[in-house]
Image (tube, rainbow, N blue to C red):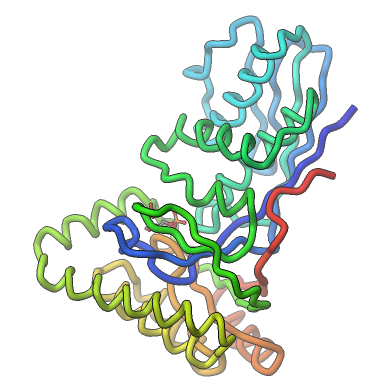
Length: 317
Ligand code: PMV
């Protein structure tokens, strides 16, 4: 018997970094997924296979996560060990991961993988609700990223367009927009924790400026929320450009990213960094009238693809 589940990646439309200091962010899941397929095997191991590598650990000890060599796989072993312990089984489990989401560029691939693996492994015993999946997926991700807010796993599990802030958590954005984005990858590897640290230093050295930028970000997010209700693409695009400018001011853009935004701006409604910056990806807002032109233009200088909002979140198949 095979248990198959898939979960989407995500993009941040507005508010990255400022969300760390209590401002509101807007994010959505995208129609690029990671699929996890789990099955019992006779060998006494947990085995994980993915395009990024293969790894296995014995099930003789269910307390050996420290031995996992490839750090990104630790959450998946955690999920499988937990399921084996709780269901007292003697078999091993093999998990195969297939991904449409480029890794390590801020598109939520590791959270999507945690969600898909949690649903798929536990589905071998009994299907968990989305609420239970997200709880375990967040615990799993904390085995490698302790400070993880859970925002990415939540949007991946439930899907759609949401707002998020530290005090109130998630809020639904009631309009069901059919937005299309082009995601362009700068091919510059970034490390979210390093970039977040760099912004903290910037904030400490420039308190007044940073407070002003936080207020500007709040206005952008408020305007964006109304523009989403009206589905006003021109307004949303110009707010994205404004948001990009704030991200530039706090020092998280790069020359390559600015070049991508500059090019995207020529034909799309607007563009900005998505996620931590310091490399990673930009998003450009498009529709049928300008998608092809923007794609052709950006393809000359980056890997890019079109994506839209995913409203289904975690799926069992
Ligand atoms: O690049 P990502 O998807 O890891 O986004 C990080 C978003 C930040 O606001 C920069 C950090 C955070 O924890 O919210």
